Image 1: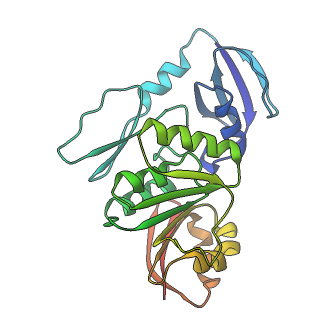
Image 2: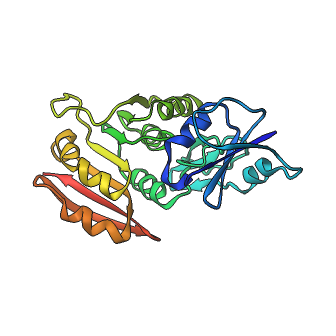
Length: 257
């Protein structure tokens, strides 16, 4: 087995990680300021980094053993390699544990998943902006949304999301791009976005224009110290409804008036 080391933070959902995963990576793990990615053999990669031979320690297996399911009332996000026990009424969402970003373990993803899990989604259209692994749109579909779409500006990430949808037999669809135009007849009733504060601020007018009247916007990925920056940028037509904090991170919920 070969190890590819590159600079990055998995929690930040870097596009480099999606590119490495799409090239056949079997697993990833954060190692200080770097990411370690395991492959069966060296392959060409569009990412700067270095290759080395794996030592005798089976780091990939150790990583798999340590990755526990993330449980909510209805939804359980679980690695595809391990057996899983469910309570009556629970639904599994299978994600390959190599996809270290977007597995539901990070606070920013977990807060949105918990909100989806407690929200009645039947008959609602859901849009995930910056879909990454596709976990949020897939979750919305499994929880009963009438339609779940994801958009991402990285085509490599879109390919990964589609693979994860197929793994879960999900109807969620994914495409490269950004928010749909304001005149889209199928405007979402719920927009979820796990990005970062400065990008949320730039996208706020587009969020509002894309939402159906009365629709809700869930914004995560906001460092608590930057939540005020996002609140201060709230445009007319969006009403603050809720805020949730988990560790260093904030999720804001707003409603289109």
